[in-house]
View 1: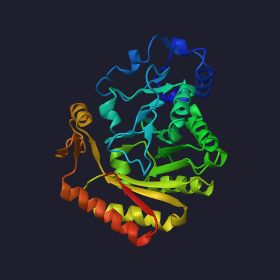
View 2 (view 1 turned 90 degrees about the vertical axis):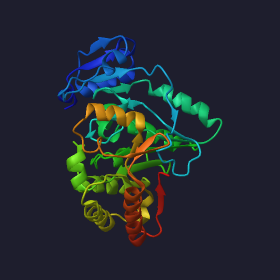
View 3 (view 1 turned 60 degrees about the vertical axis):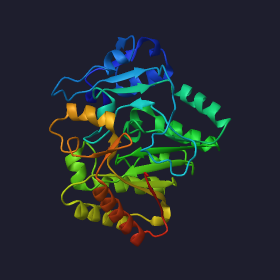
Length: 328
């Protein structure tokens, strides 16, 4: 499966002997990767117009392994909030994703020196508790058969009292959760979108029902669950499609199993959006006339307050005791 997904598989020469590299290559069914000097030799190439394929790159992270969370991302009350770029880019193809403005192409780079990430965490934990978004730059759950990194993050959460992790996903897999180390410090967050939004703007992702089934599987396994109605995307019939989506969730999910809920309309760094507009001149989302505030593009206030308020009202009516966070 994995070998067919990628046009080529590249490996930095210095990582060829790593145990993690060998394990991932074996899972990918690759016996002859292309050796390269540095991951940027491939990753930083711009994809030719019309190119739909992608390559896989295995490398060492030459810089920091943990970064402080961005202002447009929610910390959920955690004072010391970080994200890990352990995998860069995603197998899904969401039209609004900030990764399209952050990276030049669609290639996926996996940093195989995850132990260095954990070493950085060891040092941070000596100073204060740490909350990490491990799937900020990718969908780790969708890549679990290839990397095994979800299992590693969950095990660390189980073994370290001053560490917690969020793993966010749109993946519909239901089979992995019963195999993972369970801890109340490993939170699985599911981005739930209306089928109409997934079909139009979230290419290669499963629809609403598939994501709800995955959410229930994680909850049944004992993991705390976060539901993310975020980002909400403005379309002409947004009220109806988000109402239908929420009613599906409300009828299928036990609110006692939900740790909290995130709501938010689409917003993005002005730098990323400018790049996306150049790359996607026909994109309905990239070309929308957003307003710029404090370096971020977002919907006009009337649009975003209407959408977020509508979602909040539905949640409070059905799940009045569940905590709600919004990105502001």
